[in-house]
Length: 255
Image (cartoon, rainbow, N blue to C red; front, side, top):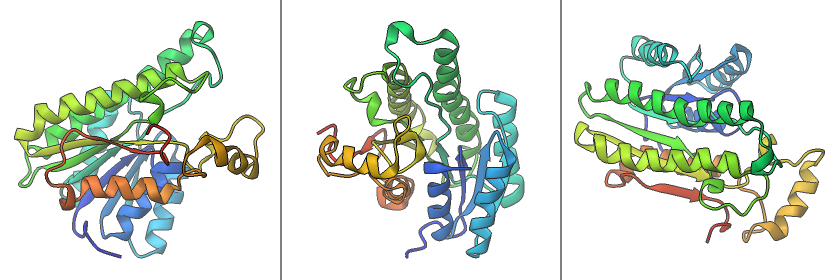
């Protein structure tokens, strides 16, 4: 294990479970001070406990990414506790009305996805960049988009995919807007990943594995650790010249 992030502070929204928790644990394992954020305290505390049990340093902060005041307070809490904000991973997201054709997607579900998946990323980016551009060395931001935002081939996910496509475009534009501020911005687009979100209604993990043998060219879902590895690469000095990219981690599904 390398220690690429020793002495650096990483913020992960949606860090209480799934991919967000995996990303938080991966940064901590490489020496980062980690701040995890989300709307519910208990899962955040569980992530912090896992990090601290392994000898790392972490802080849990409840925040709603759709509220600008919450996001600004979150960034302030990270800086107050650890002295800087060097890396931010905007992972908080929601999938609503899965399996529903576009014409039948409820308006409240659409607005909820827009609020969290798009507005939440925008507000987080704004607060993070404002902090990072005041620091020597700037910082790195990785937004979590989705391979569903790359194409529309999965029935019943078009509305969700539209919000994630917006994250990809927002990433590219923001990257160019703020590279002169010393802030590198990129995205990772996971495909089917071994989390509850990739399970169909009533499906078991064994059933998912069987489905993925033919649905994914690689023949399986990606692991949370594989997605986290892509995020850590983009946030690290190894990717110092990588700006405005959307790295797809999907076992070849969009090839």
